[in-house]
Amino acid sequence: MNSRLPFFFLLFVLIAVGLGSIYYRYAQTGVPLTPGQRIDVWQVEAQIEFQGLGEPVTVTLNLPGDSQFELLEEFTASPAYGVNIARDEQQSKVVWSKREVTGPQTLYYKGSYKEALNPTSDIAPALVNNATPTLLIEPYASSAKAVLAQATSQSGNQETLVEQVVQLINSDNQNVAMLLSRYSRTRTFTLLMEQANIPVKSVRGLQLEDERRNQSLIPMVKVYADKEWRLLNLSRVVLDEENPLMIWLEEQPFLLDVVGGEDSSIRFAISKFRTSAVSEANKVARQNAWGFGLYSLPIAEQNLFRSILLLPIGALVVVFLRILVGVRCSGTFMPILIATAFIQTELLNGLLGFTLVVAAGLVIRSYLSHLNLLMVSRISAVVIVVIGIIIAFTVFAFRMGLTEALTITFFPMVIMAWTIERMSILWEEEGAREVLVQGMGSLFIAIVAYLLMDNQLVRHWAFNFLGVHVLIMAAILMMGQYTGYRLLELRRFKPLA
Image 1 (tube, helix red, strand yellow):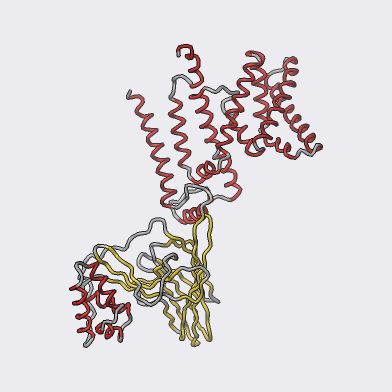
Image 2 (image 1 turned 135 degrees about the horizontal axis):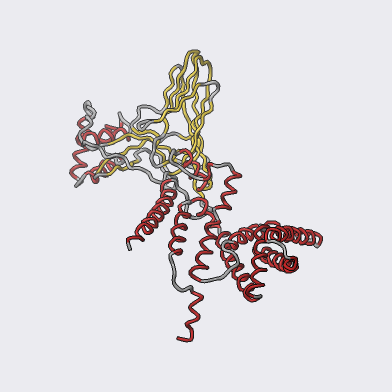
């Protein structure tokens, strides 16, 4: 029993690696489990305009750091400006600079974003009393106290207190009107939360709506009540709940800073398009140092591996049908290559072409057996014969207008020659019945393998989730340990029933 422990340990490692790889590709990089899925990508363009004063200029634009969205790509457009994009955990910004600027100037920043797979939540404040409330002057201080007193008397916890304050701000309360005469609605709410010792953040968001121009940021607030952050819109701007909201600024002092210019302004334009979820996921994975995928290879190599990675699927079918079911075939893995050829020729054309070539090859091979040739010479002669048969059938099909038959050239000629040789020897030793049984078994296995290898879902998993092949390896190893009866062998016990 102890001698089998290394085998079971190997199976455990293979299964863990395979499942872990699949989970990582799905959960961390966003590769979908089914082919054809598409995602929304938002393109946000910021247009900056200002007047140069004939002196050095530096323009700084704070970029969004919303964890709910993931940056796919970005670029800037600026005439002869130096550009630097700086990113860290706290803040991201783009800085344009130029030695001398005169007259009207226009700068552009464009970024493509998609909704993040694993968005992170805002960090809870370490201390509630970590911020000093803003000192208000009279009569605004008395108005703020009166509003908080009324809201506190009508609430039972922080969450309901926040709701009461929001309702009072939207009402015709005289104390609220006093505060709104000096401060904006968002700033008024922020001041009241500071007086109530409730953590609050000032944020500015951008409503992502397709084909919108001349958009501006919407002032909003985040308040921490009952152990969670809540986003509140206190402005008069009505938000569309069907369109996402991107938090562009969060407790940052400015959106745009222009040094050496005047009359600066910024406008946002937004557009949306749908793209392949697989291509975008692999595009992000290529930017990751730990990302591994075949999409980093040239297109020609990718297409090659799309075919190569189907072979383990065929191998699994062969092992299952031969070891567990008991189907007999000619050659160990010849059906895999035949199934691969079926993918190129289509199933019916491939079956007809395979049958014709093998039948004609057996007739000619029976004549070669009378020449008493050595095996090397005989196999070489059979290869040449197979090539001649394929050429003859191709030319004949073309003359007859049967263009579908031209795909017969996709069959592996050396494998066809070995198949004819093995069947010929089997005919001489076991008879025509055994040749028919193994030939039909080979075609049956090839058809089953073709149906799986030509399935779009299987192709998607084989190419995009390489961990699948590790699981196939584990399955083949487990089936390789089976020594019991094959399924087709159970028919010998039918009389006992």
